[in-house]
Image (cartoon, rainbow, N blue to C red):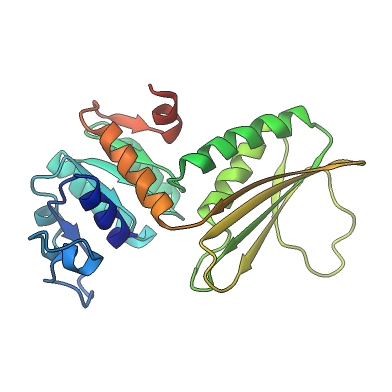
Length: 250
């Protein structure tokens, strides 16, 4: 994702001033533009967060839950806004987002696709309108994805919960599980090949079924969303921001 962000940034006239990777990365010291296929940018990949943030207006983070806190703290110390699409954050990291938002503008979303944000809003409204329909969510990703369910699936669960009180996620089913409880949100993960990311919310009634689907066709989708968010966040005052605000033009 980092390389994709760099490639799109360079193509879109966004200046890349730093590139941060883990201390164990084999790419340390290499030019990030060369590695991303964007041409030499004169920016060497480093492991030091403070150095990587020098001269930056916004840092775009697609790291891991284990690395997220250090990047967020570094951004807060440097006064650099943060856009993050890192998933599976612990409650302590989400609390740190709120604390950091007192110093810098931050925008975190488990999926940087504008289309997914719209889907989540549609799911919330549909679940509310179809009060007796069963809700099932199926997500599919490539065979190298290490976590399940996806952050996007979790976001869609939360959207359904906002649409109808009392719903509870049930992750997969096996054995004699009994009849389906109407309060369940079934959540199912598929892993295979090179699937970028598919999410389908099934709303199933007695006589019909509605399927709301989003399919990502390229990882550039998420990088483009993050770059759009970075442009929008630049110059904002300190605070927590959401993609929904960007979409609405607030």
